[in-house]
Image (cartoon, rainbow over all chains, first blue to last red; front, side, top):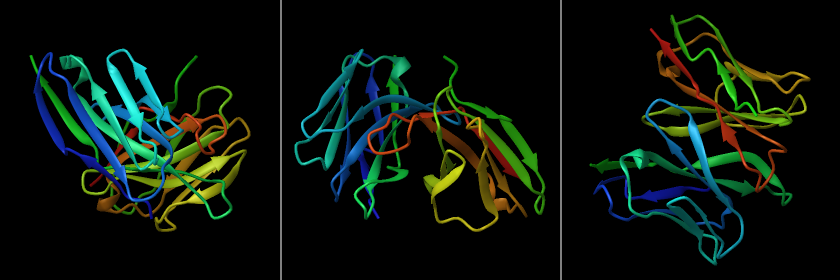
Length: 116
Length: 114
């Protein structure tokens, strides 16, 4: 099965600092998703990346998918306390017929703490 | 547009009982997926439904079942509850559920089995 490795597991930064979270797979990623979760709550959709080399930004968060589609990074610029939470990457897996398996496999998450 | 709605938000059940959780997807979305989240195992896929048909199922025992109605609302049922079933249950809604389809999650149902 496709395993997604996230690094680091946890991160503590000072407000205003930049940071990067990585998501790596041993297999090609088809549809890479980034979510944010506050403890015990639902997942907030951040971005979805599809193509190798693709980059998307929303406010101060930028996500990239590498050309080989095996690694994605999430970069936060000038972090704020509101960015604190658990960041999860998830990926779809292409089935035997080439279509979707209609499920997402997730990494273990990165816990981000932003100190004011 | 309303988001994904899960009810109830919290549940406390006794071992051996059964429970039914509900998920109302975003209007127009026809795919609903269910996930279990625990501190030890993280997020794990339970099953996915599209137009009342289950298209995929995760590696969970038969005590976990689900269904989808014609209005795309979905329910999942867990019978003969065990302590290990305590978890946050999340459902995700998407338009088609296939590759490269944006998937939006609800707030989850926190199930505690005592």
